[in-house]
Image (cartoon, rainbow, N blue to C red; front, side, top):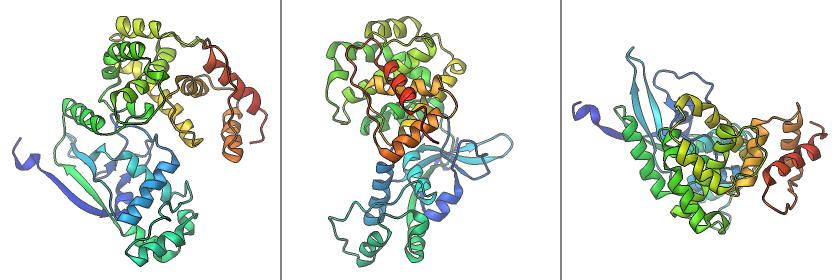
Length: 348
């Protein structure tokens, strides 16, 4: 491949043009020239609305956003589009805003911009859905610039894997982000024995979360991922908490036995569990029993209407109070039963 064909460029899109060119949802078709933020190796929406709001507020106040990055996919039939390498979550923040998924909150009230127009814009749009923003400020926002970096060639799987690993080393990782931080889920399964042994020896999941970028946090999140994988792949009928020794033995002996086809349904279910936690705006806790509880809600769906009732009940009252459970034998299952029993009769 020539040097020219391997070039990299960065250009600025207006917010409006960027959103118009995005493939917003996984079910949307890939169109020629579109910016696809839903490739298999990219993570699903895992950030909460508070995070999305902070991204938007920073963008408006400082007029800055780290470049979103794509590489070029050339199909044999001449069809060309651009596949996301980094920036899916930042992109999702803009999608959620313009689709009125949250009210914008001005979290920069303690600061005053040197630009009076920016200060007035933040004040006028505060606590409003995008559809309710004054027309002049809505137009100003949509004409702000988003930097887009494009690799004008298709990266190999090895290159994209290395690209993600470098990114992971420079930013914190949540359990949801782990799902697509590697080119394939098998990559995660293969390194799990080392991860689990480290967790076991240092009792990492017992330490208070600091959400720092150190390996301890990443290992703790991978531990949560492993618990979900075990319940889906190894013991789908089990309601019991999995001893760490069993997890270590499983990934050591069977970690290489799962094909991409076998792993795909698990990844889909895990992503849905993270999405559910995101919609309920409770974050993606590293506490494995809470995550596994929500994983049960996805993989063992309760009667029709119960899941919607749980979501509505929590959204309306913000009172999701899981009971204190003594002993670790089946906490996730008890929480699952508690949720379905208590919210099963809510009006939807």
